Length: 75
Image (cartoon, rainbow, N blue to C red; front, side, top):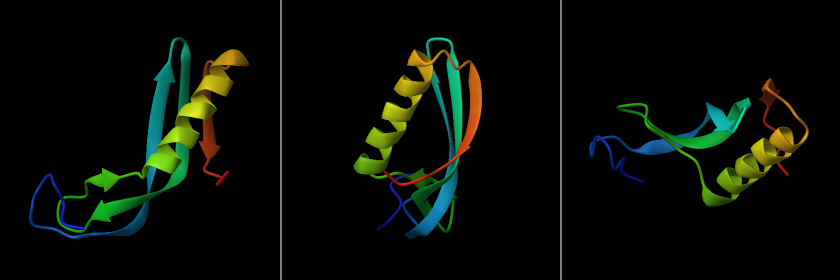
């Protein structure tokens, strides 16, 4: 897909690190699958992955986690 930010580069499969914050919880997830622009580096995460990440930060907040770093695991 053509990058919507730089409008020059094409995206290709890659990985990224996502930081999520909810109330008093900060969750860093490494190795998240994403489409990455070869020109500017903009990262695009699909809806299913985004939903899973939001569920993770919600669970972490409910468990009382303040700061945590995780590797991505597909659900």
